[in-house]
Amino acid sequence: FMKESNVVLVFLLCCSVGLQRMDRVKAVVVVWILAGSWMCVHGEINFTMIGFVIQAISQFAECSKNVMGEYIMSSADFKLDPLTYTLFMAPVSLLFLSMGVAWTWDPAVIAAAQANWHLLLPNACL
Image (cartoon, rainbow, N blue to C red; front, side, top):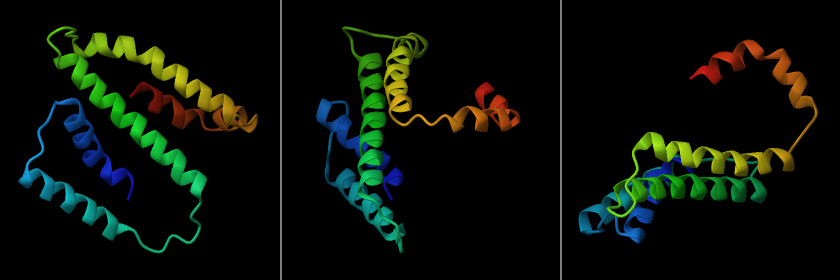
């Protein structure tokens, strides 16, 4: 349910920074997408609040990054091409992801990576 509403979150964030304008038709589309997302939810027995909060924070951060990238790349003051934007954003993303890895580190990760190297290698090349 949460991942399907990324489109809505990106649109609302774009409206908040002035990249998009909300009108009645777009509001109906937003409500339609949210209603469809909510109808897909059924029967999760093992709900955990910490998982929900981590997913919500991750989703908000990803959508904010996308909106910030669009804002920076379309701004007349600070116009960047996509490659230069990625060059600047990659170290920042690595910093935050590294903090998450340090917080949730398990020594069994290395053994699992060695056992599944044949799956990880093609994935890393994408």
